[in-house]
Length: 554
Image (cartoon, rainbow, N blue to C red; front, side, top):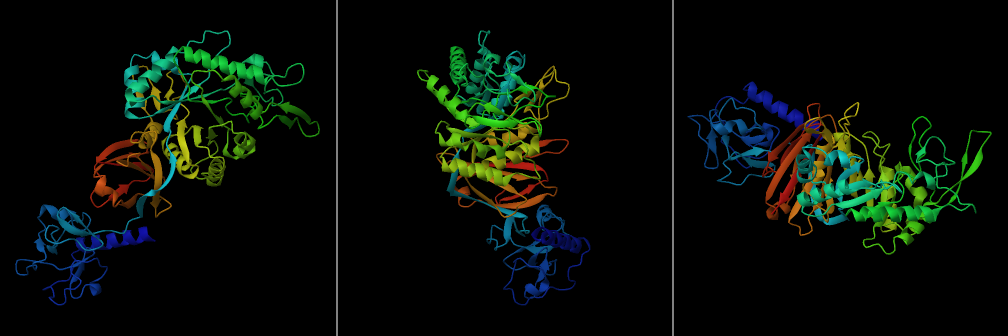
């Protein structure tokens, strides 16, 4: 109703001005107690007229304003700012902001006190209410290291991905092949380039798609509708080869270390709850939370199959990490969906993990799975672990909303898009990648700008603070710098109607006086622009399906 009321009030004022429906004749000079206050009708103004929502009066050569105001002529340059930009058709007494402070419900704009419209939402920030500490925003290199390093425009690409975008977390695949070439210099080059542009080394996460064939029950990295054999191989005594799996991980880290690549976190198995369907084979390996059996086969001919345990595998891997110069922490279990996370609670209870890793597949704008995200948050709180959203595929607006949902509902400290780049040779452009490569040059895509709204003006170590929106249609989140000398506020409007909002950022703006506003509208044209500093009155227009970042600093 607030939005409807503001639209009707603005329309009424606009019609009045356009049709010159202001009272004719000499203005009355009775009681002035309601001078230049907000109004909806003449009856509220004590003998004055309600013009453009303010108690004032018309003026002319024969009727002058009193010492509290001046006669704003139609030809005055400031007349266009009166009444929310509607042009005046008759001169009116206006209050000069330099002579008198504006009354409540009004703002000083272009030197004139103007009536504030009813906002669609008011956003406030409470820096005393604090949540998780940021690890970073980023994406996965997947298998693209060689493609990136081999580009003639790689320096420009590094500038875009790390300098402009500010992605400070990189997800690597574990591509170690026992007995293979295992040259990981390309990854090291990209990490060095990122470090130079960020001013600090990025956080490195490493995940495994599948152990090598010799460690798989089906003798292949690929799985295809075979949950009974899409798991670790069993030894002659019937036990799973956890030692061989741990040895593979140790050899992997030794090989990467030789190239100067040292992951901060490793996930021993990505998507441990997933068996690819028969028609779409992919690298995979199943792990239950703890070693056990599952039922496989069609109804009437079911059999049981033993599946390796995540806890047992993680225990073996951690034991083999002993003696490494730089020991990575474990994050996981990286299940395909949020509702699978609680099934792996024994892993969290084991104390082996340093972070709970989630994927948000199945989440969409219509169904954000808030209850499941809150359940992840509750588990993380109980076991005192941070949350990492380590893999997601989505286009721009969806990516922005998913980042909000992950960081606000699940308290995620990290959000990673699946792909940094889309390759040139693909049949179709990868619209979910941050950047799409072309034969010459590259294109920043909608997910790039979605992540930029969060990543460009934050850094690892920043803390999320409470940002409150009075409208469910406007999503708000905020991050505070460790020294409290900067704050970044991200506002999202995923709806189909534009919103006019007011930011209530006092007393922050008295100390964080510098500001910069950027906006991306995720329409077909993908409009991204810098809007300059935040208006003194804190008002912002947020178009439908757009993201706005307000960065404040000393």
